[in-house]
Image 1: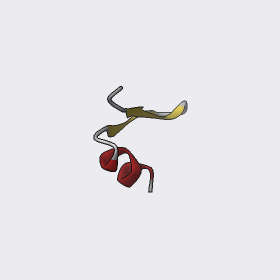
Image 2: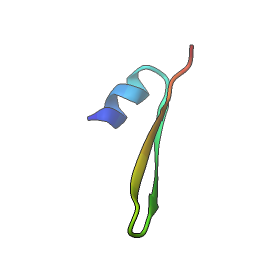
Image 3: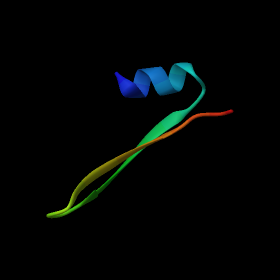
Image 4: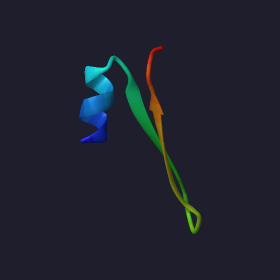
Length: 31
């Protein structure tokens, strides 16, 4: 769902994951 929204607004979403720490989701949108 978040990926769809980001792409519709001309942006993108990325994910980084670290064992025993968790995941970080980053959304890049043009301004």
